[in-house]
Image 1: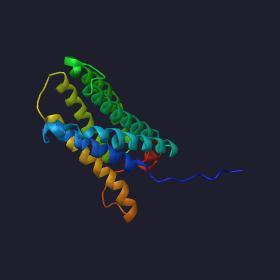
Image 2: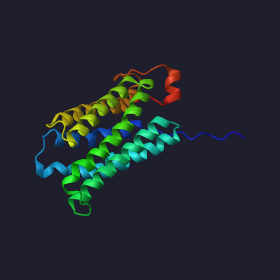
Image 3: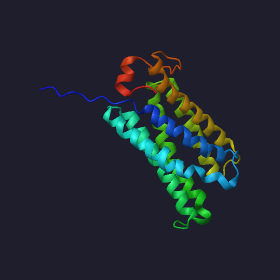
Image 4: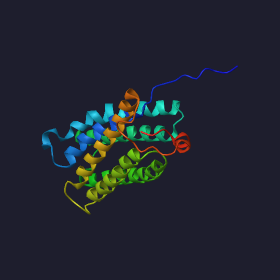
Length: 203
């Protein structure tokens, strides 16, 4: 007896939107566009939108049999939760990295750079829109690594983070608007159908 397959909506646009908005706010801080008094506004976003919403999107991607989307959204959701928690616990004195805070953040970011690198390779089999998101994200992580370890200074990582956020918003908007209008009003540069079916749906 054949079981009826339960259809669910595409969770990709939600995950991309959550990633984009949280990245935008943090990158505004990193670029020096926010006063220091409001610089940590991203913490709650990191926990609930960039974090929780992406985790949920990742779980739904598992349901849709999309390994790439499930791995990406679940992982980056956990990234935002762990980053926000680490900074909050440091600010409240529960953790005490002291003068080694940059080292702690640096090694944390280096590990995520490695993860982002092989996920970036996977985007070459999905869509140009998603490839752009991951290309900018990879550059942003590398710049953040160099900043935390004192190799470079200044707001350049923040500006690349802003570019990453806007590219992710574009991919999210395409995932929402294209199906509604039943045409590609926001092109994503989808690869061949067989490749998309094997490696995950395009953004």
